[in-house]
Image 1: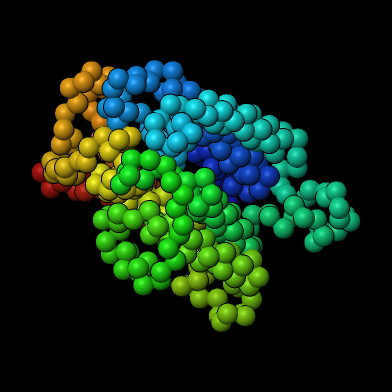
Image 2 (image 1 turned 30 degrees about the horizontal axis):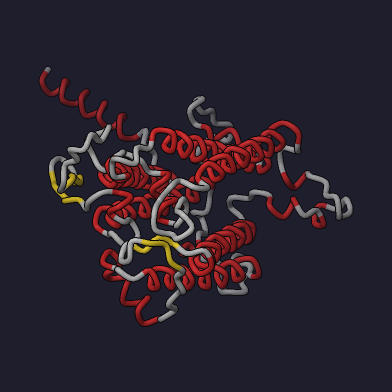
Length: 367
């Protein structure tokens, strides 16, 4: 974290990352526990939405998000794949709750039992030398490009596995196709020309084959990227001099946090635009009608059809899901700018000091 030259900085209780910045096992524990919270929220919300689901009101008018996602993935339908009955949804919710307990247990182990730093951990299948301990390979050295690129590579591989899982789910089980109002098996269309062209008109994609093709291509690219980052050394000169473009004099916990916030921020904003207008990935049946973009103090989306069928929140699921994504993404981007500037050495304390000096100068002139 940015210390502004102070070797022993102190942070407030709200700066959670400062507690685990240089303790890799505790850092992992906090992330695993956070995953447990997300799993618990997903499972609990799924069961809560199912309990209050009213089949007499369109799902998109009931302010839901968990079961619409499941419906779009083809989960909860009858054997013919035509009528959504909620079959299997309870299993999904309970499975997430069980996973949340597993993640929570792992978080507690990393927080209370295991060594604070993975490089001090002992392995079950390795000798006692640090370089032979498997856990030691995942130590955190924020200013070490070889260490960071190694960890990044594993993250990319896991993202690729998630994409492959989704593509195979659509191919084997099937997902909901609003064009036929039923669940069907979807084979991916790995057309590189179409994939390239869709990066400019992705909001208008109306083919599930193209959607799956994009995910398949992304998985392939992530596997290549992951293998590259795991196998290569960024700071050893193999790929050229370690320059500022590659992170020299910039690579730090603060910088990596800023890049993470930038990534999730842009994804949230893109998801907002996609959710607002695309009815292939976000079917009208499950999310409600498309939205209209308006401008006030800031952009926002409004319903084009106001639900009048007893919808509990008065808005479609698409409306609140889109706006929440957009504003969370907006604030994530602000967090990115804040931490990126700090990583570059900008001292925000100069701003109130400058304002204070300006006020003092103004008072002196008036005096």
